[in-house]
Length: 349
Length: 165
Ligand SMILES: Cc1cc2nc3c(=O)[nH]c(=O)nc-3n(C[C@H](O)[C@H](O)[C@H](O)COP(=O)(O)OP(=O)(O)OC[C@H]3O[C@@H](n4cnc5c(N)ncnc54)[C@H](O)[C@@H]3O)c2cc1C
Ligand code: SF4
Ligand code: FES
Ligand code: FES
Image (cartoon, rainbow over the protein chains, first blue to last red):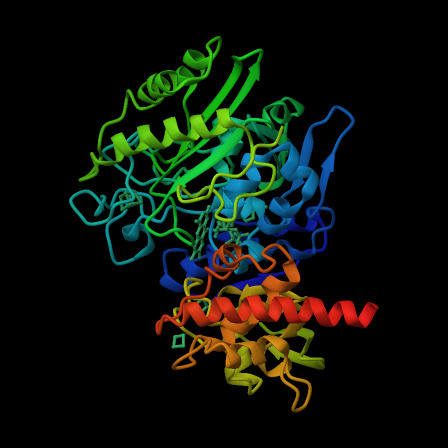
């Protein structure tokens, strides 16, 4: 591991002042320390956010929006009873990610900023446009099965691995950031970038900017009664998604009056399926409708690799997530969160 | 660059100077503090062999930089037994054949102690398996491990009830 200096600022101002090119913010370290060990990340300064005051709170304001501090633990957020009741598919996504130990250490901002699991990206010996712009992409023609089917480019075919980010995209979260030029907000849809010709520019964060919090609008809680996260993976637990979907419905008088759908592990960002949402709205929930919506969600999909199989699987995961959401949010978190093997739990209402 | 940190390990206060900020909690415990009970499997967060408690919560010590732990309370496998009296989770692993080679066992036991404190699985075998999925066992002693966690959960709840009755 490359040597670095270690800074422990006590305030946000001190943290911003400590940043310089080559520095990295340290959250729980579960992704960054791993990549520093392989050599894929080589910061020369780590700025530990562990002492910054106020970043570990979950607050609901007067208008009902919920603000989650950047350093709230993934496990703490998922287990917050009020949060899980209002945003059940976010809690389910969090609990389907990583392991009990990792969720305790991982922070919400770190989860947003985690890097791709592309095996070539993680190995500094290979050509990778994301890690070293202009060197090429060894994943193309290489091995691996976690590549994109949507939004990829000739320069990079990697996917974003987060579970948490998928329901956040569906629910129109907002990211609050601060930097040398002051504070600003970024809509979740604009936060993660598609690769284009600059796969190294992964997010809308400018150099030296720090995430302070995430916000879920009050309207996001209106989906609480019919919201599910479904995650297909190589083993039942402790594995990254092969394909996942966050599906949420508002159903009034037997008619869908609002729909949200986002897919995970299919692109370099969580993939919001706006056409599918439009197609669902105004109709009675049924299997044929969900199939049509899933079809629409994947209509632009093109395999980037030897992964044409992913497209029909993504369709089925999307349709099934919609069907599960229509059935109603379970009263209790399933024993196997987001698993296709989860036993059916009695619905909420 | 050296950093001064102090934390407690198994109840004993340690004041340390860290000369190299790259050291993980796992390497610090094993190489410097003479506590080799915590094991290194993958060194990448993927196996759970290095699980310890930090402020009562289970984490992977291989991905935790020691420099971040100023003021923390750390518990390792060496700190569970009270003298000759084993911790209920340790007893349950023995009684339920929760191991074969034993390499993953300290991590399994620390993870189980953390899981029981989280109180999210109870005695439900499926929830226990899910809650313990961050700990791999190359010998596949999973059946015994799951039963051990279930038994320890029950016994600890009973002991607590007797304590408060
Ligand atoms: C074995 C394993 C399995 C996993 N499985 C899953 C899974 O199934 N699903 C899933 O979603 N995730 C999974 N993860 C990833 C895990 O969720 C992430 O590692 C974790 O969320 C990162 O959070 P952290 O706080 O540890 O981030 P760190 O490792 O500390 O940081 C990650 C990145 O975020 C940046 N950063 C941190 N905080 C801020 C901030 N406030 N502002 C700006 N930038 C910041 C850092 O500079 C760094 O670039 C897994 C990880 C491992 C090791
Ligand atoms: S797919 Fe992207 S991350 Fe993977 S090697 Fe190619 S450029 Fe790098
Ligand atoms: S050694 Fe830490 S998880 Fe494997
Ligand atoms: S007992 Fe051998 S690895 Fe678990």
